[in-house]
Length: 228
Image (cartoon, rainbow, N blue to C red; front, side, top):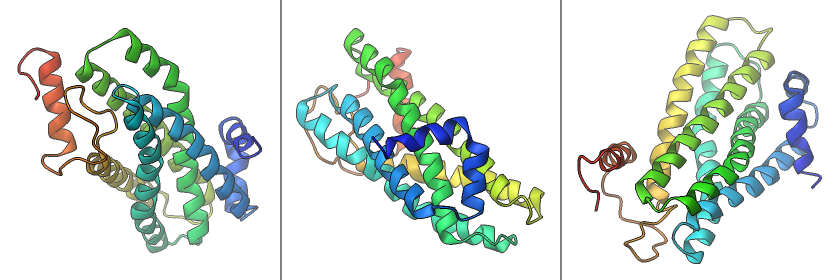
């Protein structure tokens, strides 16, 4: 509960929170609290995703969703750090890590807030493709809001370091990279929902890609073809 208490300062008083990151105030404590609170929220939402299939899938998805966000963080944080340095930033790697964790925490909390909606459609609808696309949309919305928090944090932390225009363009490119890595890593770690016609699988073969699968699901929703 003490770790979860960090959520309110991030959402209600983010200007002060980012100023503390800029000043290097309690970074270790912030990182620990954000990791724990993100784990709780992501495991909750992952369990709801997997419960559309089976208890085993619910347990698997509850474990894999935090892994997805952690690995995306590990893959993308060096790129953000070194490009920030390239444009004259004096941020430490710990400050960069804390900023990205802020985005992940916001995303995780927003996912938890969508959990009742996802659970409602899980119970009220038996259409697997619709439920999958609904959750893709939820991840898109929450992820976008999370990286907006990150962009604001980078702006505040780097406000006195100049090159604002170059840094803004760099952040846009990094956000695209972050989204691409996260979506493809999600495809690698799938299934999170589990197709009702298939037995439980911890992982699935790597054929295809995330974007083609979303396109195929849209085609089935609108009656153009059937996804098998």
